[in-house]
Image (cartoon, rainbow, N blue to C red; front, side, top):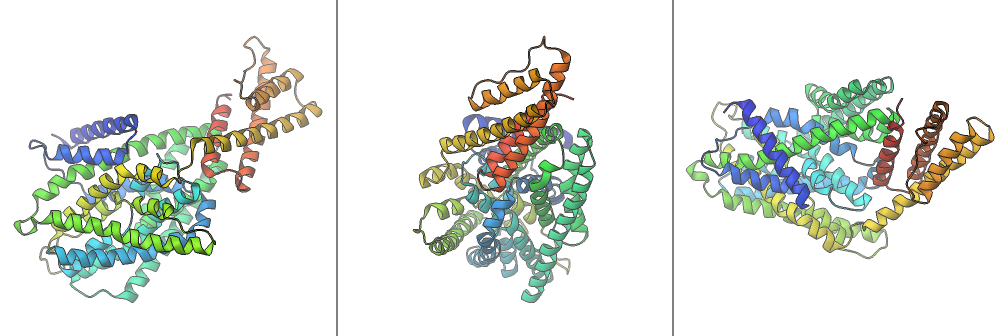
Amino acid sequence: MTVVTAVLLLVVLATAVATGARHWRIPAPSLLVVVGVAIGLLPWVPDLHVSPQVISVVVLPPLLYASAEEISWRELRAVWRPVTVLALGLVLVTAAVVALVAHTVTPLTGPMAFVLGAVLASTDPVAVTALGRRLSLPARLQTMVQSESLFNDATSLVLFKVAVGAAVAASAVSVPGGAGEFAVLGGGGAAVGAAVAGVVALIRRRTEDPVLETVIALATPYAAYLVAEDLHTSGVTAVVVAGVVLGSTGHRLTNAAIRIQVHAVYATVVFLLESVVFAVIGLELPTLIHELSAADRDWPLGVCAVAATVIGIRLLGVFPLSALTQRRRASAVSWRVPAVVTWAGTRGVMPLAAALSIPLAAHDGSPLPHRPLVLVITTGVVVATLVLQGFTLAPVVRWSGIALEPEHTAREEARARAAIARAGLDHLDELAGLEAAPAAAIDQVRRALQARLDEDPEQEPATGAPAETIAAYHALRRSVIAKETAELHRLYAGNEISDTTRRRLQRALDLEEAGLGD
């Protein structure tokens, strides 16, 4: 079987499973992992070896960028304190405790146990975002979980590089050196991401070609990642910062038709990459197990112990932080939010990419001890968390009672629709007073807006209407849509609607504007 054939078969398999998961309303990442493990165990299936460059350079940047674009800058500013504590303190504690447990229950040496701890210290943004899309979490909680998973990668990446350096060179870990490296990687990556976002924004403001805009959108995460890595900073941080910045300003950079096309293309790319990468995680586990030596056959004990440790440490870290935050707000301490935040901390693509990039040999040329065992435990913990937490996250959210009811989001969206429709009617009255358009076109637009307020189907002008009336109608509609869009952003800036409602209504306005044609 050629590489091209294998890739095509993998895409077909992953797409079919992901489509089935959507139909059955179960988490696609969890089902893809289970199916991947099941297929990988079949005796006639060849071993799968994935290059770390394929995951870290080809797959990760667009998935990280798509996750970052979904973050609301307003909500991010509101949760930066707990996110900072979780992204720094909890990652450091998790790495240390996992290293201690792994060194105790497995044959791993101290340096290699620290490598494992650094690999598994952070939650995974790709998995968290993919699992969280199905849940109606409050905006603040969704942003906190998603932001933590994006920004804690910088901390774990620094720990990983320090740990690998110690394991390869057999030298002690320098705390000041690690702190300095963190500043360079994290700060430098953030600066590169902001710079790339600024350049891309300037280009997109001057571009009205949908094809070129789509290419720019697809190239942006790769540009941020590669530039940052070439400058020896954090490519992950650069992609995240670029995604957050452009996600918050993208609606002002292009027109409706371009936004619709870019969204459709990017959604397709993200769907394919997510589907394939989670299937690969499952497929690779049997391959890694086959490569273990006889001394590492107790790997199931290591996987169970480490998986329990990462979940337990997260539980012990999140609950006190949540209790402290709630007491500062003079509110009753509740277990609901920390329970969901804890259970949403799955591991996924990032740990796999990091583990695969562990060098094969030390500086003296000798094989790095127990590298296959680190890969197996890492992949096993990823599979365990994706299956255990992935399949049970939705029940935990329902049990906690913090999910937004469909009626809540529907009422907020209905109020916002009515507000922007009224803004459109006011604008239309101003135009009518100025006699800036034919009365027939103004009347037709007014009836359409009133129908939206009355929740009746809107009517387009009759096909037999004069061409001048239809052209005037379309021009008026564009003018009214511009006013409605401005009102939509005013509502969001005034904290009257959530980012989810803003994005949904903005897309509806974009579709309406694009339907008017040129």
